[in-house]
Amino acid sequence: MSTPASPSESSANTPKTGRPRKRSRSSGSGSAEKQRSGKYRASYLHPVTGDRQYAPHTFDTKAEAQAWNRQHLAAIDRGEWFDHGKGDVLLTEYLALWLDTNPKITKDSTRELYRDEATRWIFPALGDPAAPSGSVELGTMTLRQIDPATVRKWYAAMRQATKASAVARAQSVKPREHPARWWARETGHAVKSSGRLSPQLLAAWTEAGSPTPPVPEAKSSAGAEVAARVYRLLHAVMAAAVDTDGLIKDNPCKIRGAGQAPQVDRAPLSAEEVTALAQNFPARYRAAVWFAVFTALRPGQVFALRRKDIDLENRLVHVGRSVGVVRKRKGYVYETPKTEATDRWKRIPEELATILAGHMDQFTGKSPNALVFATTHGNVLSNSQRSRFFDRARRTIDRPDVPWKELRSASAMFMYAQGATRSDVKRALNHKTDAAAARYERTSEERRRNLMSGFGATFGLGSANGTQEPDNGAVAGKVIPLRERPEGRTA
Image 1 (tube, rainbow, N blue to C red):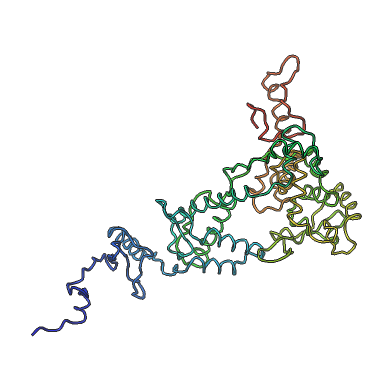
Image 2 (cartoon, rainbow, N blue to C red):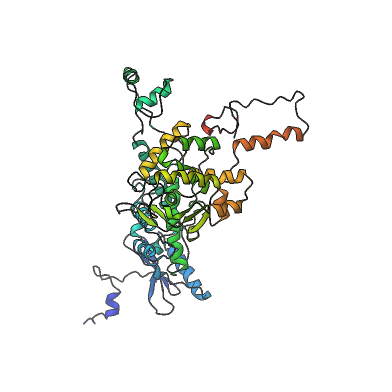
């Protein structure tokens, strides 16, 4: 009569065949167990509780699983063991907690921007599943499952997605002017930059086949700024998981330079171009252009100023708040400036004080809380209206590449041209680091020509008759945009 198998013996047999289950060999207190998929699951015993700790992923070979075990067992022997089980937190949950509890995020607009970009570019599946590299979906992964290889795969897919989005958005933007006006400029017809088009011009445009402007070509840097910002967000979240909460041992975001957006190499604004921009702005907002150049303040700070923030007698301006849009909220929201150091009284020159005095007498309400640069109804000038006014003004100087924020860059460059140091510009623009102020340290075309004009005399190469090389159309004080520089001449 056969003796019934003991529980330990029966558990060692397979349920279908009754044959002894094949056990994996152990390396110390670690094991490598083969799964039905053919891959191996590595695990080792917790040095304190005795609980088994499993690897966050499976391995293709037993040797890889055992190597993972040996790495952690050696860390136990050296006293450097780390409880990787603490990283079994979904990235979606931890990022939401990080946004709500991060003391450095003080503005709701910033918090909503990060939340929106994480939902769009970090959590969803990105990449082509049919491609050899496949797709990656960080939103379904825990913190410890995200390794450097996964981050590299996600970043490549995210960079392609942000570029495609930027290209599609640029191509879908409707032109701000009638295509007949563009056609007239291209064919040499006299036409104003704004106003009603003549019937004769419209008829000529129709007879020409009603041509429209070409679809703008995608730039190589399209979407790069968004990609850099999203990468910095993920890097900051994983850094907090390492340094603040101790949930993972190392930050998997190790792509060098991925958080730095490429600098756009556009020709800097000259003094004549800034003057033309201001003169072609509506009279009601013309002083805002001068104010942005003289103070180097951001647009949200400029259009949040009230009458009580301006002290014309002492030529002081109080920068204490900013106006902007918070996602999923209606209307404009007033918040503290970007940094705490921005909340300060800023001295302005006499010329700007004179411009402000005339503007406020004509366009600003008498209430202390009246906005300095407001609409006819006393409301905030919307971003779309400001962009429309600026777009018309920049087309008059043939600089469609210049955004409003370039006024801040122009202010910094004028400081450098007058002999300011990097520290001076850093304090004037309220930057935290020297590297931020160094971005504006670009020499103007006029100053560069003046600096190099004395090279010949230095080496005794001056011409006998004193003639100089022709400037190929470069007028003193006028910047030749990069796209229009004569062939063979460099910046």
